[in-house]
Length: 115
Length: 116
Image 1 (tube, chains in turn cyan, green):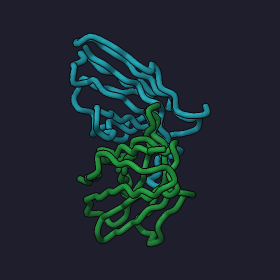
Image 2: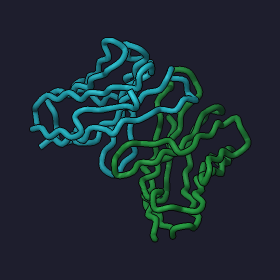
Image 3: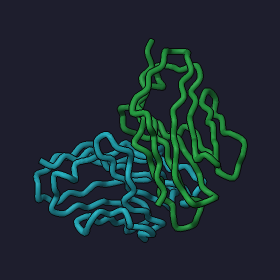
Image 4: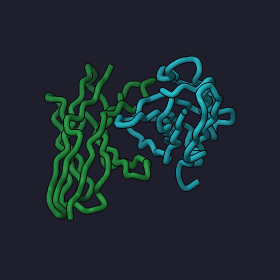
């Protein structure tokens, strides 16, 4: 595709519900990243995929957060038993091969609001 | 762990003037990459400029340039001939050159306002 796309653009849910956030990276990019951006903060790393596997999930805050990338393209970030503190913008980025010098291209994010 | 600090929560500049945004970082590594990203209200982060730590020459991209001081661990962004479209949040970011550390570490950002 022309760029990284994320759906939905906005998501409102109730505390305790389950949500899925989708990321469609740039075609051909093997590296995919999820970040979380709380209000007034910079993005914080959650997880990095190289192909289908999670190469680094050290940023996931707890076991309520899980992400998959089964075919090495689209990724889904899953949040169980949502809490109000999960409210944030969830950003996805992709890069060609995950090399340090490469540009990470970001999507527009999904704004999650947990009531 | 690496940290990135942006000490200016907000800055303003007159159209056509020059403004400098500050960034400092803390790391024990010698090889790394530094980035400035722009985030307009649309939320999409856009890369402005990149600097490789092993390069002494400061990076430039049209009206954007950096002042990279490795010993001081400082990486400021200079925007010349500011335009209304430059108004956005600007984030400084660090990335290790070490394999297995692919994540970007961001500062808290600086909100830039451009006055006509």
